Amino acid sequence: GYTSLHKASSWGRINAVSSLIKHGANLSLKTCHGETARDLAVRYRHEGTVYLLDLTLALQDFRAYINDIHSQVTDPERIVGKLNKEEKSTSNKTCEEALAWVASPEAQETSLEAVAEKQAQFEETMSHYLVKLAPPPSAE
Image (tube, rainbow, N blue to C red; front, side, top):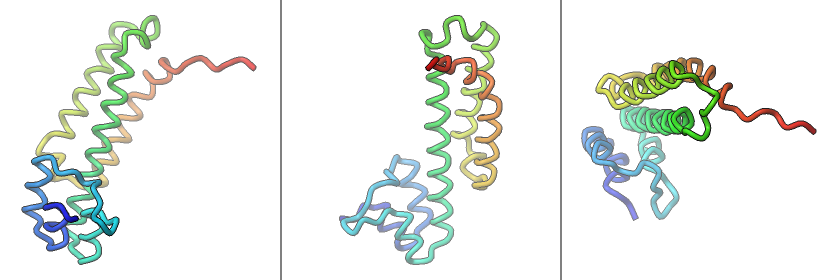
């Protein structure tokens, strides 16, 4: 079958697509023909809708990545003896700021390049902490 998001995407109804996304529509659902909403928007050449879906997916992926990193830098068992108090605080704050940006109106109206740049900055900032949290190499 087709969801409301599939139909709105295939018809190029960008405002409806935006509203459905804001209300939690699942972008990964496929039709009975194996097509996502993005696939349908591409097929019917609705570039604005394709861009909106791409941006939404990029922001969702970035949010999931931030949440994964945040869970690592706040896991008491993982960070004990590896991060000092200031590092714990700074890494936590960095994650919270990144999550706030992803949810902001600014992020919803940004470019895919800006999302990639923000993610690269986040990764660079957090790499210092993740190196400290990495398990020691096994001796073979």
